[in-house]
Length: 115
Image (tube, rainbow, N blue to C red):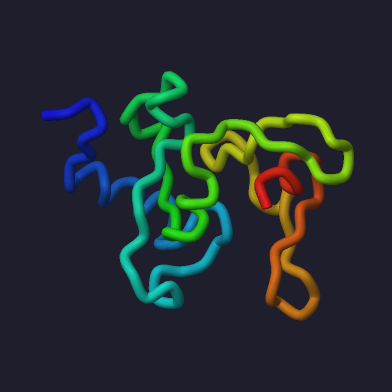
């Protein structure tokens, strides 16, 4: 069994913790249409593990965009900052939906870099 193996029970626990939503864009499973993926918040290539506290639910778009990154450039300051950590940070402190409900905007350096 590989170190990245996620058991069905762990998948259920992570899904329940995430309330059936992508931890990055908050889109519900029912809206996405596909099953959401288990994301290693700190990628294994960066020293992350498959422990529950390092796992979250992500849609394929968010998971694909994040990839193996743990930092990105804040477009406002040009500085490299940590990406949003859904197990340690609160979504509403870093993000909001634009008034028309079509796009997420970053409220902080972490939010902007993650978006």
